[in-house]
Image (cartoon, rainbow, N blue to C red; front, top):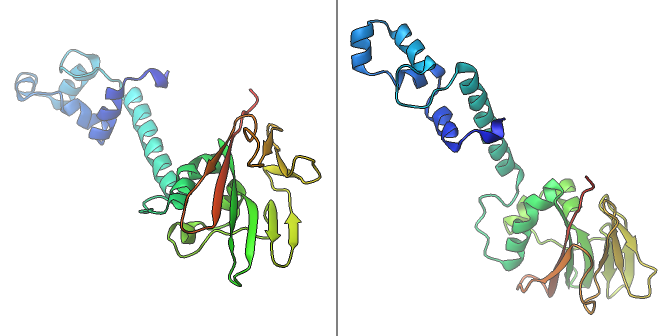
Length: 233
């Protein structure tokens, strides 16, 4: 039933701290002059005999008040959770990550990030990163603040050091790695079992998946594969 409450109700509960304040707002000085009883005047407003505003019972006011407060706390909590919140991002890559952060944290999307660049030893490395998994296991504030660069690691979905020829692949809570495949590296989403094909020559990465090339001065190459998870109902 609460979904059918008009938006005006939200304004009422945010404008008035208590139900008495709401009732008092509809009592005129003339009402008090004739009734000579503030409590009686409030009762008449509650019953709809006085006042020009919306008739609202105490229980309904309190319910709306609680719902509005829960919504406010939820938004506040989300702002604290998102590492990109409140940041002035100029780099296209960081903007792309920020646009996907909430969806990856909530499970609506599981993005795979491909990065090719050089590590601290100037060795060329590349790899595929499970963005949602990294968000849950690492503090991303330093990345969005520009103090740290996101680079693939041997513990990520896939990692390759071009100079040492070190190669690793690891499953994550979201993806299974399929390395022994004729068409190249594949990733299977563990939730809906859809395959993500990261071959740049493939027409599409797969069902419910998109490939986005990000032009950024921060990396030699950056590509993001977004997979929208279709949950079973």
